[in-house]
Image (tube, rainbow over all chains, first blue to last red; front, top):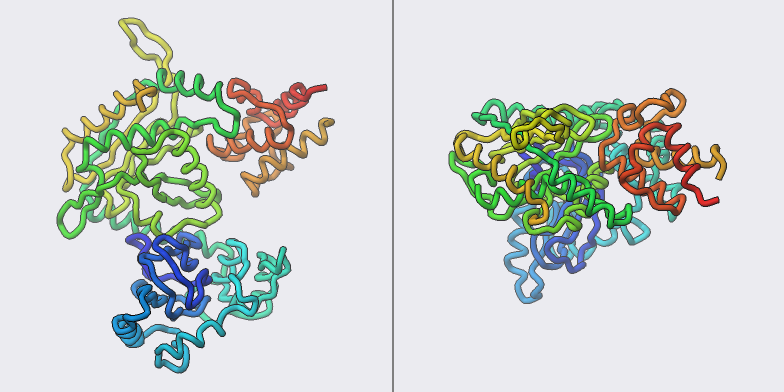
Amino acid sequence: MPQLGADMAAGTLVEWQKKPGETVSRGDIMAVVETDKGAIEIEVFEDGIVDALLVEPGTKIPVGTVLAVITDNRESTPGPAEKISQATLQKPAPNEAPSGGKLDKEAAETAPAKEPPSGGRLRISPAAARLAAERGVDIRAVSGTGPSGAIRLADIDVLAAESTPDTQDTPNTPNAPALAMRRAIAAAMGKSNREIPHYYLSTAIDMTRALDWLSAANQQRPVTERLLYSVLLIKAVARALEKFPELNGFWRDDAFEAGGAIHIGWAISLRGGGLLAPAIRNANDMDFDQLMVALRDLVKRARSFRLRGSEFTDPTITVTSLGDQGVENVYGVIYPPQVALVGFGRIAERAWVVGGAVQPRPIIEASLAADHRASDGHRGGQFLRTIEQILQEPESL
Amino acid sequence: MNDTELKDVLIKAISDIAPEADFETLDPDDELREQLDLDSMDFLNVVIALHEALGFDIPETDYPRLFTFNAAVGYLREKQTP
C-alpha cells in the first residue's frame, strides 16, 4: 500500500484490475484504493507477471503492507520471487493469504478462483465504491442493477440498510468522506505550519498582453478547443522554475532535494468542500493545447475521485488560482514535503500607470509562499519577477 | 426549440457540472456563476455542453450574455437559426 501523500496512514482496497498470471508493465493500473482523497488508481512500478494478489477487496490496510507479488518476466528465476512471497507472509496483514498462509506456486495458481464470478473486473461506479467502503459493504456480494450489471449507488444503499457495518473505525454518517478529507488536509497543513518556516512575497502583474493574446487565439478556436488563462499561468510558472530549481522540489531529512522534472500540482477545489492538488507532469515542456487537455482531464477526474496514486506524489510545487470570481490575494500554505506554493488571485481591473498616464488595466496578484530552509526572499522575488516578464510575452510561451 | 426546451437544455448543461444546483431557489436574473460557484473551467464546460446540444458556435465575446439564467435563455433563443 503506497503512501499517497504525507498524511496517509492506511487505505482500503476497492478492486483489483489485474489477475494472477497477467503480464503487466510499468504504469498499468493495478488496483483501485480508497483513501481520504477518494478512490485512487494504483499503478504498477515494474514490468512483470502478477504472481499473487494478497489482499481481498474491502480490506483496510496500513501503508507499507504488501498488496501483491509481481515476478520478473523470466520463468527461470523463481528464487527471488519466492523470497518476497515468504517475507510477505511475516507481515501481520489483516487478510489471510490463500491456502491458509503458505504462499507458494500452488497457492498462486489457485488464486484466480477468488476472482469475481464474471471473470472480468467488477463494474462499479466510483461513487458506489466510495459508499461501499464507507459503509463496510462487501461489493462482491452486491448484485448490480446498472448497465451490464454495474453496481450503482442505490445498490449499495439497499445493502447498507440491511446490514450494519462490522467495524466502528469508519464513522457511519453521510459526511464521512468530507470528514476524512478535512482530516487529511488538517494533518498536512498542520505539519506544514509546524515545520516549514514560510516566507511570503507578492507582486501585481499586468495581464493586458496575456489576455489580448488569449482572446485573439480563442477567436480562431472552436469552443471545444478554447484556452483558459489558467494554462498561461501554469506555463509561465513552469518556465520560470527552470531558472529557479531551489523552489522546485522537496525538503527531506534536513536537506533540499531537487525535483528534477517540473511537475505542477494544480489545486482543484471540490464541490461540497475540500481540495486536491494532483500533478500536471512536465508542464514546462507542454504547449497550451496539451496543458488544456491535461487540466480538463485532471479536474474531471479529481471531481469524480478517479486520480492515480503517482499524481499525488509527483508534484514538485503547487500552484493555486482562486479563480475569476474570487479574491485578489492568496497567502498559501506549502504542501509538505514541497518547498513552494505559487498563488494567483482573480484578475481585477485597476487604475494602472502606463507611460505616465493612468489607465484601467487587468491586474492579477501573484504570490509566493516558500520554505526559507530551501530558498531566500531575494531569489523568491526574482522568481516572481520572471513570471511577470514571461506573461508580458505570451507568444513566446 | 421553444423557451421551455431551451431551459431544459440549459438546466441539463448546468446540472452535469453542478449536480447539487437547485433551480427552484435560483434567482434567474442574478449571476449564475456566483450563485452556483462555477469557476472558469465549469463555465467553459457549460458553454461546450450548450454548443453540443444546440449545434451553433458561441464566441467568447458572447460569454457575458450567458451570465444569468434568463439572459442565457434569451441569447440561445436569438442564436437559433430560424
